[in-house]
Image (cartoon, rainbow, N blue to C red; front, side, top):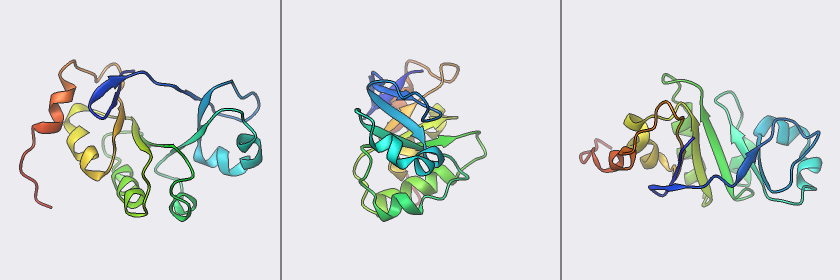
Length: 145
């Protein structure tokens, strides 16, 4: 999956981990729900830990301590799901300054909107990626908000 960070194709230095049973070396990205259930285990990890939020997650713990993680990923399971836009906006308003990454159903036509909500990284699935996706950020020049 191509990863765009600040409009540039970049290397993904985070490994996705589902359960805290065997943590690989390096930086890990874990589901927020799993992190909250096994916080001590993940905090003992030698590398950096980041979380991924789904639309069903309660983000109050992240809003209470917004800069606890260097990276927060927000997952979009399908095109119709828009709560990730609201989560991004709420995190930025709470003062989050780290990397905010969109994952899942990330497509070219949504990149500009995602960026306006506070995302600065986009994990685009191979089937949706095009070499000119970076140009999508500047295509919409008039905004209603």
